[in-house]
Amino acid sequence: MSLLAWIVVFSLVGGVLSVLAAALFLAFSERLRTRALPHLVSFATGALLGAAFLALLPHAVAAPGVEVHQVLGTVLAGVLVFFVLERLVLWRHCHQDACEVHGAEEPGRRPSAGTLVLFGDGLHNFLDGILIGAAFLTDVHLGVVTALAVAAHEIPQEVGDFAVLLHSGYSRAEALWFNVLSSLTTVVGGVLAWMAFGWLQAALPYVLAVAAASFIYVAVADLIPDLHKRVDRRALVEQLALIIAGVVVIYFAHGTLH
Image (cartoon, rainbow, N blue to C red; front, side):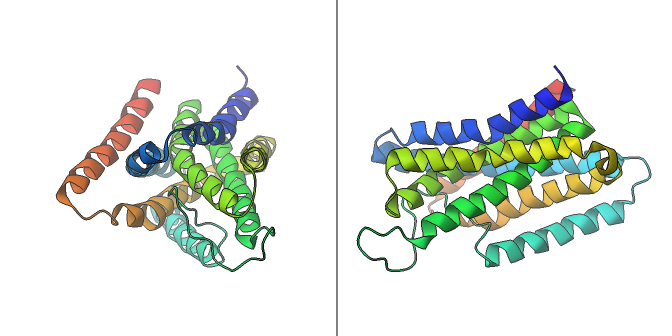
């Protein structure tokens, strides 16, 4: 299979298939969704952190002629950029089945939150596609692991996005259709990364550093605060076990593929 085919297929895994999995998840009872979502978020946290620290960053710092301080400085800059994006309400996503939607709306009129979620999701997915493409340009195995980490995060994220869209007045069919369209920007980003291989090659270690920054920021600023909402000891044990499971899956996936 050609490199472009790998990128397109796994961009679809990270984008469109995650949306379809989230849509299928919504078919479950509300009680089951309420119980399962926190577990998905815990697992996604471990998968993102595992991909960042065990796959992306090692490849970035191991590239020939790369200064470790420059790579880590890129990670720091990336975290700050994502902080700014979140402050602009373009990056943060809901990972719950009941999401808060700001702003009173007239009856029959769709709240701006739905449009904002779609725009932010499209931007987020586009960048995910670039990061997946850059990972494949570095190493096919790294690309697979990166796409798996993206998919692990996208499923609970898309469930939350569906909730916002439905609350905003979209029908289930409209919410699914617009989410699928938004997820296709992942493929666009991946193909653009492949087309830019010539000039992107020297910058690949730093693109991987930005990918690591994205995963770290989403895990620490977006997912972990949701986990802190459950304060009992049983929740702590469950969350820690699932976070470790996410890390272990990435560790063995990366090791086995190599």
